[in-house]
Length: 245
Image 1: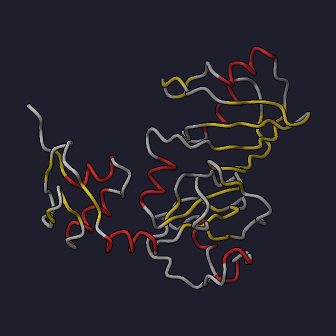
Image 2: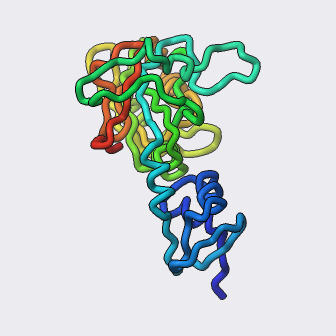
């Protein structure tokens, strides 16, 4: 017998919003099931029913901002409860805005409430960090089965055999879990290019250690279809409406 599921979970599975956002929309009466408004938290529906966000919810989503930061060394991705390290979000200020004519006059003095990193980048790593107020983008980039590629340039020290290069591509495991296949190739004599579809803690550094390489520098240069480009270290820019991950 088919079982009813929370509407907030169904909305998240459909990629329409995060579960937290879904609860907010339900409270505001901005969600319908088969054309009928639901406004009680915990409301349930069958998977075959038509679940939609109303125009008011879509307008709220359109107003949410996503930015790209070129994170320097020394900043952590997430907020530190003990305030020992400075979070990367502290760099999202008007002074650090990298202006572009493509932004068409967007104001760098925006309300940063709810702006959170979609993915991690170690304190000693640099490059592309996405921060967003949009739960859909966060889920797309860091969800359990995210299809989004993340590309890194990794400066290394040590010798790497053809066999170990193949192991980096597929054959290693971390914490008892076999890693997904990766693209790994030499960029030049001391730099490797990694393309991953997952992001375990310090994954690339640990992978390199397992084949006898020491990582001297690590930079993320792309997430999905959007590249870091010429964005200087410590600067940020808006993700524009026409850009898709």
